[in-house]
Length: 189
Image 1 (cartoon, rainbow, N blue to C red):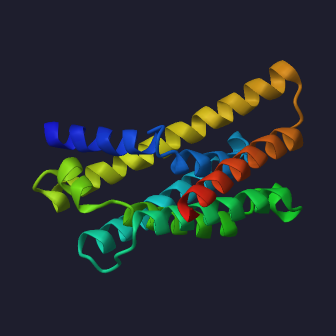
Image 2 (image 1 turned 135 degrees about the vertical axis):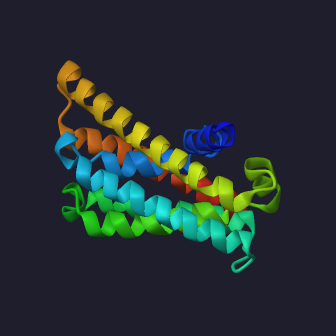
Image 3 (image 1 turned 90 degrees about the vertical axis):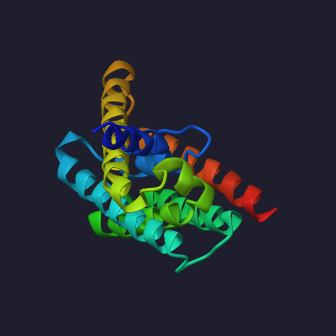
């Protein structure tokens, strides 16, 4: 039980880790257009992300795909920029599920591929396959917690400051676009 708890919290903190905040940028991008009524869509999006993360992690662990960390960060930045730009389009202003599911899966795969050998031994010790389910459940819990935080924060901002949802979406999508562009440029140069 202690190993499950440790792996669970490793997964949870892997999502809400500030230096590697691409998962939080993803959460902001998918939840900024949503309301509490969209909780099923958001749950499905985070689940697809975790399944993609599982695929990427297994591909990295078994050396099926070997990419440099800079290449993966570059791919993640492009995915986040596309998602942020999508939020600016008329179709992106609705909570279009299919596009966000695809993006969630792709970002999850790239996040799993980013795990390196040193992280495998640090996160999972010597028992990778036994600890992986708890780690993935922790990632799902971290994503759901971040989504809930964003939904509550958006509701508070809308009610306390009277900010229109469209303005809120434009501000946060622009912020995600700016941060992901910075990630892109740092990975490129």
